[in-house]
Length: 272
Image (tube, rainbow, N blue to C red; front, side):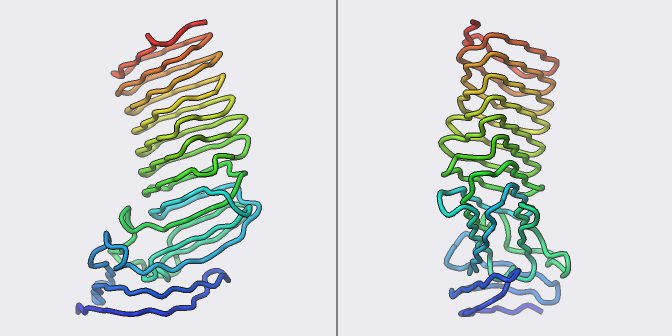
């Protein structure tokens, strides 16, 4: 049985002990026989009602998401988190902070509809004010990360096992930055500020940036689309995959091991 629902919703909900309120018009098609809920036009923001919750986690260090999400790292009170999600998904999503880790995922206690409106077009929207994040992990889902506040823990690891896009002016992690792609990652950040930069690609990785790293290790078994300007003491490139890799700038020591089909260009790299 299918029915059309047009509703004005005024809601006060409790999600993990946090009050949430929303008032907005939402138009849905609900197929109750198939337990499906699908927005008529998920690209129309006015047609999708969002509910917002606020969390406080001053010790937050890790972010893990298995939901399509847009995450903005911003200036603000340390540990303040705002999460907005489609109201129709309320009973199917779960948010918690445990041991310094923000976890965003499905509610395993209920049956999830076959089709839901959560997607790249209708994601969870998150803002986080924190300066000690050491790990961001996307679990087989879409994630857009906007870096407006670039200070992280001394070591930072970003892992993509879904489709991840990262945008910002810079990322600062004094000791090390580790970028790992098991899915599709595009990194549009002007500068990576760190001592050691580790790049590991098992699938697809795009980087267009510069770095202050003195020790760079780039190991790829996937498809690379990388342009990186460096000024380092040590640069190791191990490529068993494909794509195009271009390093510019200067390096004191360069070691290239290429066994795959990638085009690796270091001709514009000055050897000191």
